[in-house]
Length: 297
Image 1 (tube, rainbow, N blue to C red):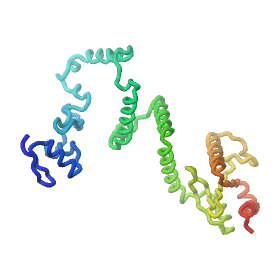
Image 2: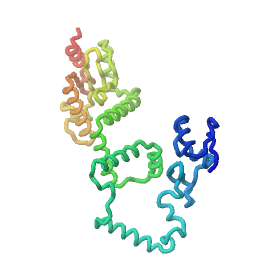
Image 3: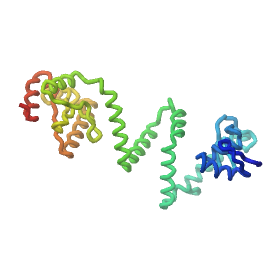
Image 4: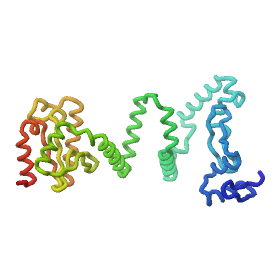
């Protein structure tokens, strides 16, 4: 193929393999980048079916495939399917039947450790391929998921998080950070009223405190105490007309309350809860209770 000259440092090489070794080591270029830049003069090839997309790269010596996978079927004359669509249909049905009857066996069906490791490696590679993810998201935009697809996705995601506690923790912290930015300037009237009580008692606090992946309304760092102010409706105050759990949102809120209670109990940290009714109708009792619990004179 002639002399190859590195376009960065102008060194000459007799073959593309030698140029590849140099470019990989000195300029950290991939084989695909080297091939496009030095063999194709910077022009990416297009699928010969005419779709305009770039096919996959094979190697530095072979270059790119002529077609994207299965796109050769779009070109008349490449096979008999275009001449006789019925032939194509029959071939598909035959393949489906052979798979169903067990005549075909995929390499992924082998349960050996080598195969399982290979499958996990492929999954990890696909998960980390951001460009692939963007392409899939773009093509699926606006297309509603089927119930079966939602179910499978849910199972896959749950297993992924169960098998990777670090991933679960990182995701939880990212969501907490996002929530804090959304809630930082959106204190409810109830939270503002309770905050005014804390200010009256000269108690410093941290609003929307992240503890073990959950946001708590207030944290009193000096006393190592967490505080939740509970709305009567959402949290079902037993001393109000909302004492019965009726709505889905109330069920979820109560479930979240129990989860927070268990976290604080597990890590031996005090959690105080004050009802909306008490904060609004008898703030003097709330003040008195806080003084007693915090030993404030």
